[in-house]
Length: 171
Image (cartoon, rainbow, N blue to C red; front, side, top):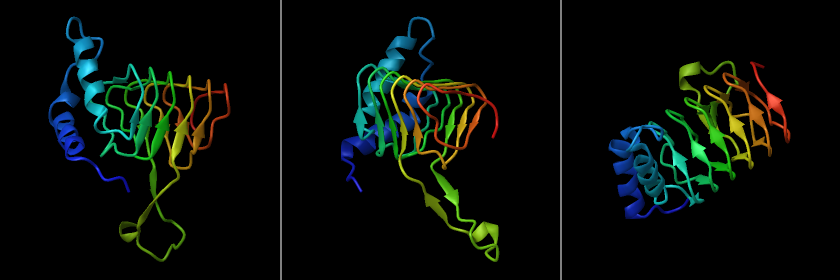
């Protein structure tokens, strides 16, 4: 577990209360400034940050201390991104992408659903030059989305995506 600095905690609080709600990047006149402010703020929150980030309005990433993001990459408007994720370079995400990294144990049917514990999956790696469309859902069973892949809007991703694949739809 990485010990978060006081500055990181303060940045997370300020991001969550204020910067997360700033206008989206495409807003005329002030959008670019909002993008830069959010990008600067996550440098104190994320485990590793590249250059020229685009963290959009409403992006949610929990504590963020297990997130790595490369150059020229972004997290879209109102996305919810899991902890323990590595996002490569030149990755774009449409709005409202949901990336899950946790699931409930289902191995014992005798245990009531509301009392089952959850478990975390391995780190999700999204390699370079990936495009994730609007409202894509990436489930905890996914470990890797490979270089050059395109995930169509509304897709539900249940398994790893090979290099340069175009995937769409439900399982």
